[in-house]
Image 1 (tube, helix red, strand yellow):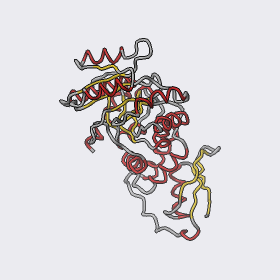
Image 2 (cartoon, one colour):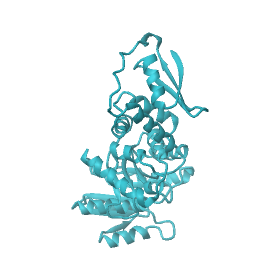
Image 3 (cartoon, rainbow, N blue to C red):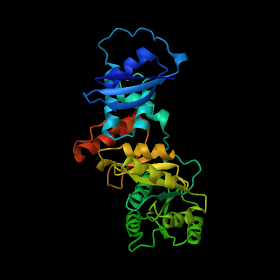
Image 4 (cartoon, one colour):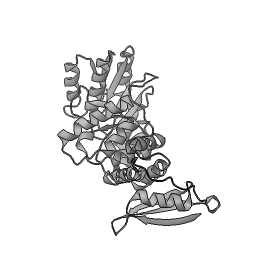
Length: 336
């Protein structure tokens, strides 16, 4: 294995040096900012595969692919994407045409992560919203119900959040506003009975009490409901967390069966690296994201173009300017 480091003003120029010196088979090992203001990229390649690439075509007036690759690198750094994820993404993207950074990043994300909207439920299993306290499970439950209603589907809601004072009160208010039935289940046995009465509904969403992933008793209590089977636990996780902590939370709930992730409070976070960290750590598919506190139209399917647009958008703008762009990102993704 041959290792070599390259220093350049931009990551794109460093990547160009790597391809020229080591060829297309080189693998990115590490990417760091250089103390002189540039970047330092370390690449590796088997000695047997070292070869000279064909000459690069002459520069034209078309957008420079190097500029697009550098924009993607800067976005990864700005969002606090963990190095292991950012470098793997850059390694994938280096093989694409980066003159359109949004399209290139979208392709890299599609190659690296899973995307599966909750609107696509072939098995029709009830959805169980799970996650730590205060992450937006109840609001997400209401948003999913509102979207299904607007699509002409029948909806039933169940809450198991009955232990704490006022537990289930917020969902009860949402259910009343949408003229939907809301069943309360204090125990797994009551949940089984409630599920039996909702079989005819097109969508059944179950809201649960927030559980501390560091407290074994909390996770065991949630597991007692999930052990009934026939349901899909879906993790609700807010954007803007510490990436390592987000990964730990995701793995804890993945151990209870979560396979999809709903990102909440995307409109309130400048850095989205924790979402990529959570999905990567626990092998979760991106399902939806919430970009507004509104219940109607408040949840958007996650797909690679939408996530790429969110990552490449300057999130240091104010919230009023940022929110419409996230909506436009989804609309653009649907038309792509």
